[in-house]
Every structure is written in C-alpha cells, then in structure tokens.
Image (tube, rainbow, N blue to C red; front, top):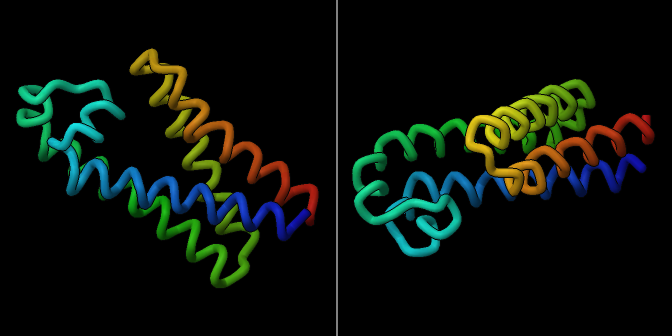
Length: 118
C-alpha cells in the first residue's frame, strides 16, 4: 500500500505542477481559459491573481515531492491535507464540483493509501 500511496502522492504533485503551469504561464491561452472557465477579457484582468495562485500550487507540489524524496510520512500527510482542504474550499467557493475530482479525491485516496501502508 505504501508504494501505491507514493504513486498517488506523485500524481497529485504532478497535477499541481500542471496547474502551476496553466496559472502562471498559460493563463491567457485557450487551454487555460477552457480549464478555468474564463473569457479572454477576464483572463487578461486576472493574470497576476492567477500567477499568484499558480505559485501556491507550486508550493503544494514541492511539499509533496519533498515528502517523496525524503520518504517522510508526516510531510506527505501534511501536504495531502493541504491539497484536500484547498480542493474542498475551491469546489465549494466556486460551486465547481469538478475541483473535487481533480484535487480532493486524489488527495483523499493518497491519504488513505499512506495510512493503510503504515
């Protein structure tokens, strides 16, 4: 279970690296606008806000990768919990249930697998 948990932790980290790229570098592209449901005008107005969000997603990814590299259970759990909270808040505050499937569900699965492998 620990190996499978680590695979999920790595997948969650990669998801957040992808989100970082979308928010920091590709915010005004059709791909990012489709992913986040924005228009060209809204994307132009919110570019710096999105870049800031992207940076935070990068910190989540870095923390998860740190937990993997050092094989520290508590670090992985902490950052998965951060992702879980961010996913719940994001999905409820934006009324976008898709965020649950992108963030909350993978983080919850990772936590479950890590605890079962302990």
